[in-house]
Image (cartoon, rainbow, N blue to C red; front, side, top):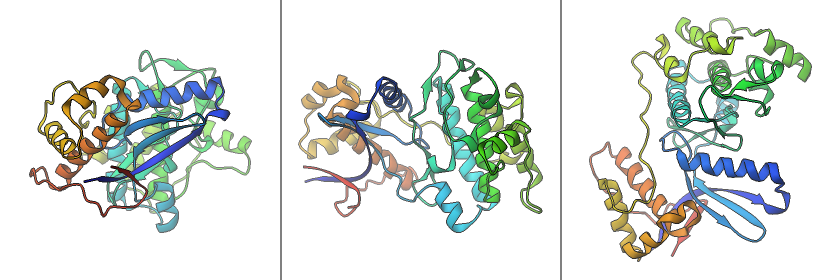
Length: 325
């Protein structure tokens, strides 16, 4: 019996890893290990070879937001509300864990299905001592950069994330970025002046209000992720709750964990083997397998509406697959 599961693999060339890039990779892995949310790409395993490091992650098969808008045009406001609510929940979860993303953009918003999105690419993520900590490293895409990244010696990562969400929301409903320019210097001037214009007839008043709140020149005036979730535009659309941890605990606590372990036993993985690999975390292939199975169990439950219906691991889902014998 075997398991096939689609995965995304980030390949890192060891020869190109200087000290700074190694620190960033460590931050990325550490961040993904701390996050358990249905709208954030999950890390299954880290595999190391003499020449490469491989990050084996959850795969979102339906493309990214930038590609969808480029091909199909702006989202309807209803679809934009659904996407934004999920992203806001993901960012709120990150900030609650004292993590900031710092590279929120349409290319890093992935569709697991037509309507479910996942925030990914945590390569610039950073753990902070407190959510108000000031950072100094400039990172991310210029078009999504908050004014303080372009003009100040330091910035708050959480407030920069909220600015980027404002840019993302504007892009989702209009099909274009709010700030542009023929050169980086012109783009910088437009961002610093918060100079953008809505296309005629696009965006309801509550939607425009939220964008205006997020795209404020003063970082302190921007709402937090939790405050943005209570805005008029999102009224009646509660964000998704945090998901279950994929940690391999000493003893199963939930029904999903017990089901995952039962499936692993059918794959020939004993409780003794699980326990011997528990402390190795994402650097263990057994832990990686456990995380894939547990994530699949949870996903099946969500897809069946929480009815407890069990859908066994199907061998026909073969595309960008990881096959474990």
